[in-house]
Length: 183
Image 1 (cartoon, rainbow, N blue to C red):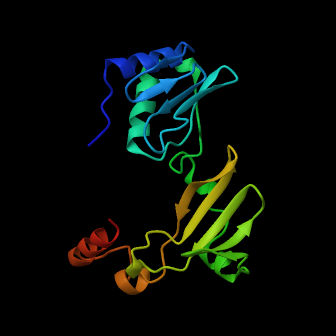
Image 2 (cartoon, rainbow, N blue to C red; image 1 turned 90 degrees about the vertical axis):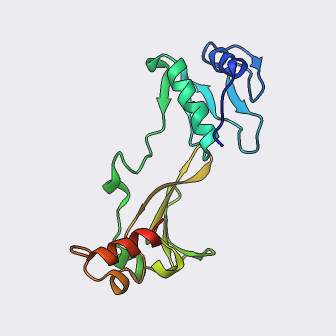
């Protein structure tokens, strides 16, 4: 069930935009930071250098609150993170899957191998196959706001060609199977 903001919580958002402190049923602000009373609801929005920052909240409830902040705040007061994969997808595709495969593994995670790390950007190559439910071969992280954040995914996972053949002209049954597995 999606988060519903009542009148009191909408007043908290307005108080945050006006940089005033207020507590509501689901939200609270000290005028500088907007938080939710649920697990993972910390730091939904905050003021930095005269602009409202809207970090990746990681939850639908957080996105609902951030959308309400976008509606309540003047456009020139907002400064959103521009790390979305849809804004410039090719920017993070520095290496091909083949190049990453040939690189030495720096560290092994639960499902991925770390292949490149320059302190700002990391490239992880998946060891999983499409049969395991993997949807991408490469995962890119960027060190931002004091933590590693996922910023982009690309490449076809292992087993893609064997399962689907030429992706240019799949038949109807293959398309249905592909869509079912990639959900």
